[in-house]
Amino acid sequence: MQALSFGDVLKIEDLPITPVEVPQWGGTVGVKTLRAKERSELERIALDNTGKKDPGKFRRTLLKMALA
Image 1 (cartoon, helix red, strand yellow):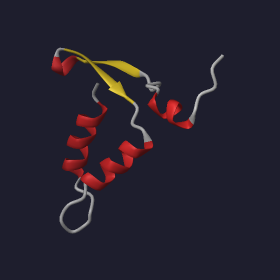
Image 2: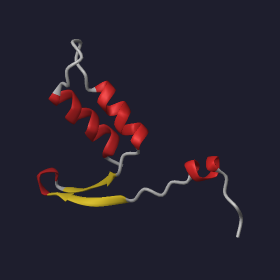
Image 3: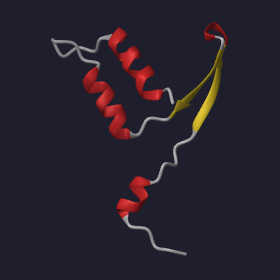
Image 4: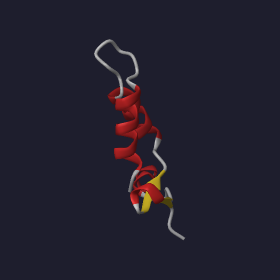
């Protein structure tokens, strides 16, 4: 078996995509786990101009990032 470098491991797409039925939308969507870097980016993006978390912006951004 081949030895993997740190860079090799980071490139592997190993996070599952889970199908979730959404009857209100009339179908199924894929939901993926966010990596730590993506979660940090979400937290940064979801802040308003005063540095407080904007709940609406947080939810919209989370949907964009987690739906596969």
